[in-house]
Image (cartoon, rainbow over all chains, first blue to last red):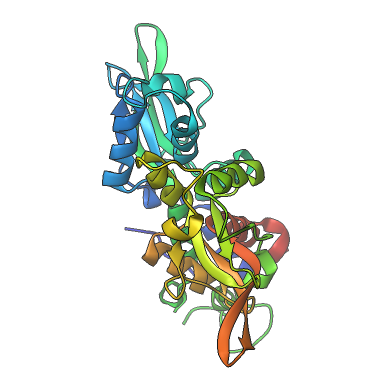
Length: 164
Length: 164
């Protein structure tokens, strides 16, 4: 359940309360289901999955199902313009690889992620949980947060029902 | 009874005022510059322009510079997977053609456009001005409104500066 804006006396005006409410929206409230592909899959497979699942961003995982990289439509379009055979190019060659992947956590705010997407000019980020495995920090992919989710958060905050 | 915490007495609480302010944000305030391509250009040219200008959506115009269609990264990725030679395929074959193009006007609200982008699962729309030419309504492309602009509007509304 999403929190509602409360009106109580706090020495702040309603605009400030609303503003705080907007700043407190979290990834967890708006995230989507992640779509992942194994790092051994081909670029051709990745394009098929992207169309089948109708997403703009795929997360690439290793054999242990930990985040290895990220693939955008732009990466796949670039690859498809190359001379190579897409069925023989593994996604691990064309993806943006860890640790260069921009990520977020379920408890991050929507505003923080919106700023990341704007500043890095990307469409979406994986929502991850950090795990320590064999002395290293690895990332389990538990969600997906894209500009579509931001648009939904915008519509949610602008909705009349929230404030009556 | 809940205390009134608005800036001035209007019979509305501050949350409602803020909410109205959010609903009043317009396309004009947040739109970007449009990137257009002529309908006689090839799919190959379109992909090059998309990378050079770093946009996800191109607007296709006819000889009279009126809106003829729209091209997304998804359309170009689909075309690049086909067997045809991209240099010999004109964009007019692969674009979404008028009158099936979702558009908006400068005075439309950001909320309206956000809902269109979400419901139609598209990344952006052309901002157009309607013109009557030779007895028909045609469209001049004057801007571009994408999910990035929505994210910027979200960050703007969540900013502290706005409400102090």
